[in-house]
Length: 302
Image 1 (tube, rainbow, N blue to C red):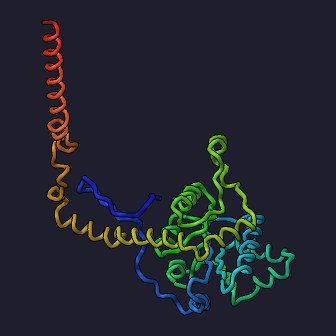
Image 2 (image 1 turned 45 degrees about the vertical axis):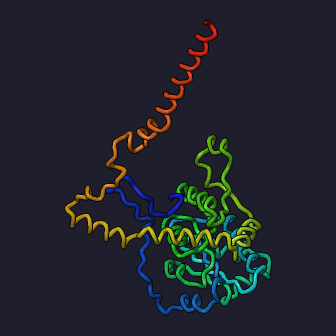
């Protein structure tokens, strides 16, 4: 994942940066119960959580996650939870719900008006497009991550594999979200570089990260800026235009070579100006000083 999605200027005319490839086609949501539930909620009121099709959440991690999310709902007003789980993860959630000892937590999770649990596939891009969605809790796969940034949704990361760990670290560094994964020290990473998947988090850390990100203008502005950069870069539409343009020109873009690339080496780095305005006057000055010193020494001898 690059540090930013902007369109830089390249000296090579055959190099183009087109940003993240996100399908910009508007998805028209079907009139399902889920879509009606999402559209019925106020602006920036839904916490949407999804973890991809292959990520498996262990029981203890699911327990801390559910308790943390439920406590977050209890501490905030007019907030809603949409949790999309597939296959084994849905069964793990059912086991956690059954084992919860707190009636207060169970009542919140069983409130279908406030909590929506979806088993199987959901129209994620359509969901992220909705104004009612405020935060995205994700496994930080590249596709989900780019869609979240593109639609200006701050992210809470819960990574599962190596690529996702790197993405989670970048999300935190860019200030566009939080992460339940805390990177180990450099020494620990060197000793056991593949042990990231064994990380743990508490229910309190889940609640704390959600509270820190919810309605946080700093993170919202950072995500909006990233979204603008991605859209300005062009994406899929711009890629098609560039390819068509390249074909129509028979693959010859030499006429678009930058002025800098036509300069000689010493001109490109202004070495000629350096010599004329700095080195040459310096040499002349040193020569004159040396002549004066010699003349003064000769006069003293005489």
